[in-house]
Picture 1 (tube, rainbow, N blue to C red):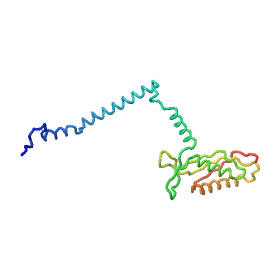
Picture 2: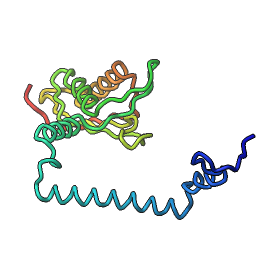
Picture 3: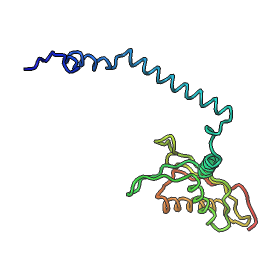
Picture 4: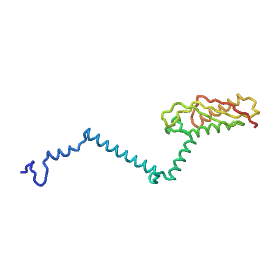
Length: 188
């Protein structure tokens, strides 16, 4: 028979090995010390990075290709505008860029004979996500009409109807209001 408490063959007693296993168990004090050590390490990495950056060390500088890529992305984002939440389709939700919506409205205005789109602004409903705009609710259009137009109120009504039908047809979008301001008259 073997004695369970024997210390032969360099074996430790069971109660000692259990005690050693639990001695590494986390405690509130030990967690705090480990957290502080981790935060100190992060601070030292930040300090070292900033020092290297101030010295112009190329190992911490963005490459010219990375800088160019970032600049191109920012330019494209600024040019296309924010994303607009559109009504979900049977295939799911989608967004549209502000540039796309303004381009569609401009095309609709320019399709009315003799009318030229000058400026379009759009009001939006509150968005569900801070990165997008809500559904378009109000379109404000400034146009130039032909000097020989006989009925300017009727022309504005035609432009308004054209924009509304284009938005319905292409985007399944019904806008609450479309304002037309005839800002200029031009020779046709």
